[in-house]
Amino acid sequence: MQYAHKNYDVTDFHGALLDIIGVMNHPRIDETLLAAADVKLDQILFPLLITIGRYGPIGVVDLADRVGRDYTTVSRQVKRLQEMALAQKNPGGRDKRISEVTLTAQGEALTSSIASARQILMNEIFADWQEEDVKQLFRLVRQYAQGLEEKAHPKE
Image 1 (cartoon, rainbow, N blue to C red):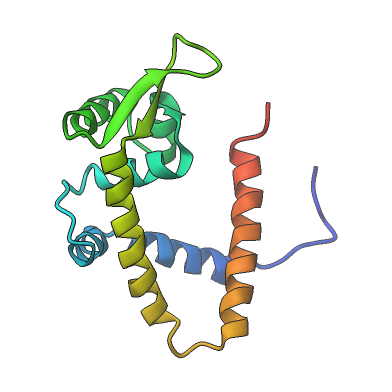
Image 2: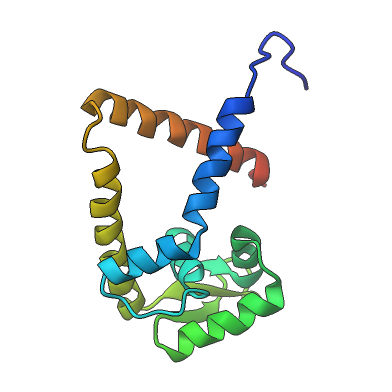
């Protein structure tokens, strides 16, 4: 269905999103965040750990989709997280044939340290902003993200 009555020029907005994604996906940002959290973790495992924490329990196929990697690669990387005692696999809640990944207590402690460091680093960016502007940004970005999520992962 088209929404012809709403024809916004999204060029600048899309460019801003690409800028944000580019910065957020830059390895130096992960290094900075991990160092600020005093966490020693292979950068390739970092997005998996955070995604499992956010969406777990999560199947490996869904996890691979969310981080934009091949299923077999993610499966090997989840094994590494298991060996490090940061994640565990259990039979799925709906389908016992499909394993779901969750964080262990140690993995949760690690993601908590990272979240605290993220809080400090991101608040530095908002230091000169008006409080109402920050709240409005958070609300609108959440609203936009929810709309994207509904398009990408429609409810069954």
